Image (cartoon, rainbow, N blue to C red; front, side, top):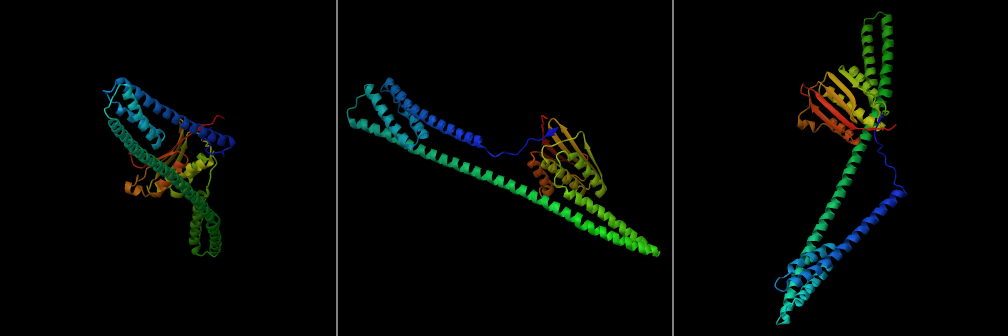
Length: 371
């Protein structure tokens, strides 16, 4: 047996809630641990650069390397921590130089150099903090926009599904009106016409033959009305009934439109959800209608196959082919078929055939049941 995976989602239980809370705590703890590691790394970098400054002596300046811990401090914690590391960097540089034997004639020179270095670091802290702030704002905007787009897409899908459901209800309502209203009315009309024809025939009236033809036309109209009503009332098909439903579609198409329509299937197919079967049927039904009404096809083939875990529904005709691209985009039938396929997770395509006609394909991935 072939079945689709169950798409229903059970409501989240206590275990799922606990698991989500647990992972949130783990992520928060990981962020704190990473922050502590970065803080320790920043202090270690200042110490290492200070030692290197002492070992290289006063001839080589290591001031430029202190930019690394300063920027890391701003990125890891914030602007305040960056200012602290800037002061520590200047202090480490002065201590390293004095320990290496640096002597200045005036303390003002030392103070001036320290202020220049500190001012440079503070400017870097200020600029880097601004850049990080802009980056975080941009990320937040992107995140909010992504959430908004996701919600908009979900709302659009919900509305499209609601439109399809409304269409199904209206289709069912029209079919019921045809079956219970117009069909019964035509049946009553045929009975009255038959009675009139019988009375005319009893009197050998020449109009009796005309009445018999009228009765025949009314009975033909009754059959077509019932056929239309039956197709419209087909709201949902059993999960094992796709093959029989497509066979009945081919039979009704031959009777109603006087075209050669055949159904072929290499095996019985059972799908996990009746709604999936219903969408597949309506895709085939819409493809057949397009072939008859727009393609003016005289031969239509409906084929249902399963191979390598994929169910393929193919509707091929010998009609006029696909319309131009400009008109194809406005076709409601093609968009409805594509949307139905997307709802059940299938891939839909329409291709023009080399020898004329059109091929509509609906490819649905399947999962084999273990039963």
